[in-house]
Amino acid sequence: MKKTKFLSLLLLGMVSIFLVACSESSEGGEKNVAQSEEIKVMKFASINTSDRSITLAMNKFAEQVAKETNGQIKVEVFPDSQLGGERDNFEGLQLGSLQASIISTAVSSSFSPNLSILDLPFLFKDHQTAYNVLDGEIGKRLLSEMKDQGVIGINFWENGYRHLTNNIREVRTPDDLKGLKIRTMESPIHLDVWKELGVQPTPMAFPELFTALQQGTVDGQENPFVVTATNKFYEVQDYLTVTQHVYGANIFLVSDKFWQTLSEEEKEIILKAGEDAKNYQREIEQQQAAEFLGLLKENGMKITELTDSEQQQFREKVQPIYEKYSKELGEELVGELLKAVE
Ligand code: EAX
Image (cartoon, rainbow, N blue to C red; front, side):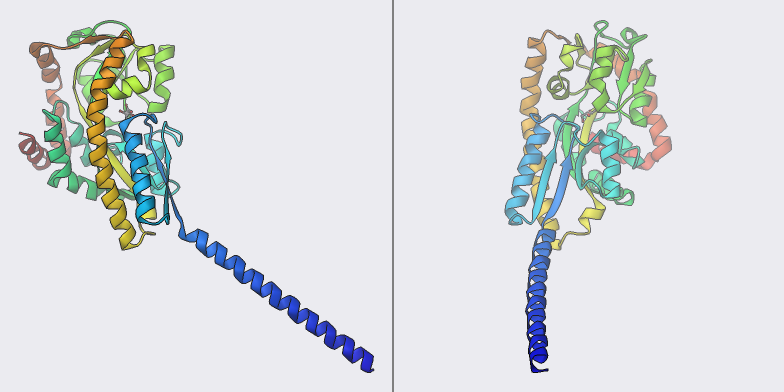
């Protein structure tokens, strides 16, 4: 009897030591989980190449956020369409599978239509006028409207003035465009502009563009010098006309789902780092525009500058766009914009 009692006591003792050990190790485990959950990962995607101003500024943003949050927010930068095209990225932000992206106003306007006004042709006479409008009242209002689409518009970065390229012939007037198949962005206003210019436009996501140009699915495209150069379109395009037909802005967007997980302090850090990154990006982009125009020439593209009267022909052709969008989006909005750009 005594022996049995002793054995059962011993057994009981062993079981409790075992239980304590288990509970300690599971507490330790929980601690580790809690710690790693505190680190918020912010995947930040763009379709731009890693050497472009945009990616350089995204990297700068990532460093600043890591420093200011002591590593609690980890920004992972994905350039080069690694996470898809602009529409894919926008939808990722809405779903919360992507936390941040740099997306053109053009593509964003198919989600938030008032943004179209920023892509009106020949709207901004120079960069400073564009910055004034984008950073001012109108820009702020358009960004705040995006919240309805599940995204937080932080600010506007530069894509820049767009210029036509093609591999068929030199283009100096709208007449020279006849019969050319031109890829446009997936955006109603861009399609309208090219229809007015007398072209059958082919909307296409950016990641498909190089192959489409190479295989002759389209004859041409239009983009800022830096985009045409960093994506090596000069390998498959012979002619560039400095049309400057649209100034394109990009929007720094954050997923609202992600935004809601941030503390007030973290939001402040993101806004400040976003502002610094925007200023840095615009400055570097201006330098790169000059530098990469040189690269296009070195690679044998024929660069055509238009005379005032040649450019005037393009301006006249697209005038109906102003009436159409005034009607669609409201004369008040367009009127306010036209006043602001004067
Ligand atoms: O943002 O799709 C386009 O042509 C854009 O200008 C390009 O993706 C750079």
